[in-house]
Amino acid sequence: MTDFRRLTGIFIAALGLVLSTPHASAQQPDRGDEPGLIADDGFELDPEWRKTVVYYRTTEPPGTIVISTSERHLYLVQPGGRAIRYGIGVGRDGFQWQGLVNITNKKEWPDWTPPPEMIQRQPYLPRFMAGGPGNPLGARAMYLGTTVYRIHGTNRPDTIGTKVSSGCFRLVNADVSDLYDRVPVGTKVIIRQKPEL
Image (cartoon, rainbow, N blue to C red):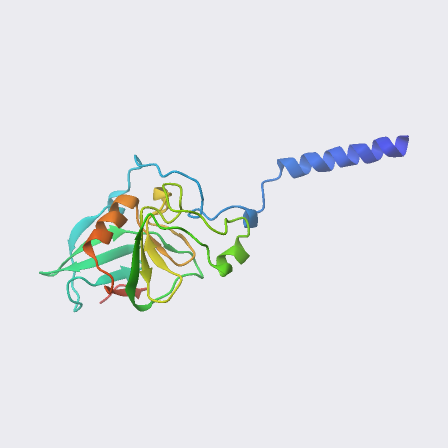
C-alpha cells in the first residue's frame, strides 16, 4: 500500500509539472500562422509601416514591385521618381530569399493549403482552410512565379514590420487589397535582401 501511495504521489507531481510547463515552441503556431484568428481591424500600424507615397530612385519602370526584405517595405514603382510604399512582414531568419519573378495568379479571399514542408515543421496546421476572415492569407493573395510564395494579407496585423513568415510577404488586409487592385497578372516582382543603391 505504501508503494502504491508513493507511486501515486510521484504520478500526481509529474502531472502537475506537465500541466504547469509551457507547451514546447514546436507545438505553438508561428506568429503569422494562426488559423481561425479574426484580424483586429482597429489595430494601429506604426507610421513606419503605413502605406505612403515616397520618393524612390530606381531604373525599374512604373508598375514594377520591388520588395526590400531588410527594410521590410514593398514598393510599387510610380512615374516621376516616386513609389507607393507598403509596410510588410517578411520571412524569419533562414526563410528569406531573393530573386526575380512575376505575379502568375491573383485570388480574393484565397484558400490556404500549407505546403508539405510547412506541415512537416508545424504538423498541427490544417491541411486545407477555405478563404475567409480567419484565414492566415487574409483578403487577397498574389502568387509569385512557380514558387510556393505569395504576397498576401494577414489575420495578424501586429506582425507587419517583423520577420515571422516562412518566406511569404504579408500586408495588412486594406493594403494588400489596394495593391491587388493596382497590379495585373504578369507584374514583375524583384525581391532584394538589401536596398538598391
